[in-house]
Length: 422
Image (tube, rainbow, N blue to C red; front, top):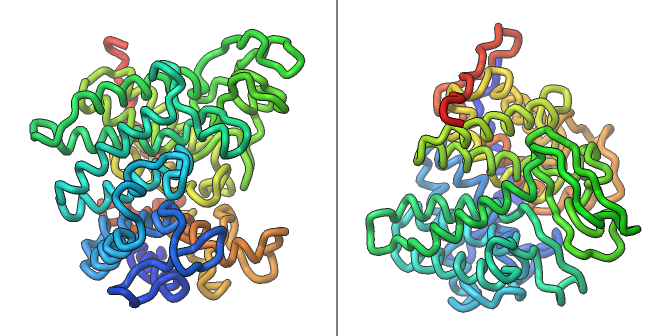
């Protein structure tokens, strides 16, 4: 007998509200920084992680109280950050680096979906185009830097760009045929999509001349259809001076640390389905199915998802992945069951640990089996707790779309990709 995932998600969110919500100033998520509640937020991405869980639950249930909380947080953020800080000032809080900017845009898009406010549409477009310009390495065909050099005395390129790409794609489709549509944004997004597929997708063997720290060539020969996280370009102090970071250790994929990232794979798979649905080129669908199958095969711990790379953000693309992959006949029962098992484990852990949602998804955590040098940080970090709760909310969304766990039942095969014209 299985839990009702919508009930589980409601309880998990209530646990987070008890720790990270205030009704002051009309009600909003409490600002945190580095896992500590602070008086005023320096960044937006940290609250965005809980907002994503909330929207996923709202998508599943239509719960008006959840919508009130989401929009209350937006109202609060506007009192803290002036317009210029929200939409520009790249390299500074809150748009400190490429990923921070992407999560901020995901929040703006969420608010726009709920309100249709044209001011938000202008904000989304301005922030996306501004980020493309600020983080570019010359022509957009060269991609975007992850950060300014001054931030780390270093910079590199990153598939964290997925948050910008999928947001820009969705925004362009939402505004198509209206005065809010931007052909410039669409064209630039597609250039960056192609760059991401070329440099980060693990789908071919190739050689990076002088890619190694000692000047030797780097042979990249991993074909599993996941995505590298980082790409180095003349980067000192790394085994891979040029080429994918981790190119010399491609199979280093494990809990809480990996050369790949599950949210990147989920986001790019969902984006490829969206592209297929629009232009009907079967190559996009083939890519999506290869990557979603790789997630199930590789990011798998005891039949649940592996929290592999960024425990603060690893569920950010789940809502898209549910809609475009899991809640379709592109997925198998076992692929859907991975999400349900993940939610089961996380929920049981939260019950056992009194409302704390740890980053281990392949086991049920109890006070006796949780051990890590950063355990206090894990307990108190909004983003880590929210990321795990998003997995429960994603299971609730999948349930609302007509699916239930099928543990032990015969496998229903996935729809094969149409190879015609590829």
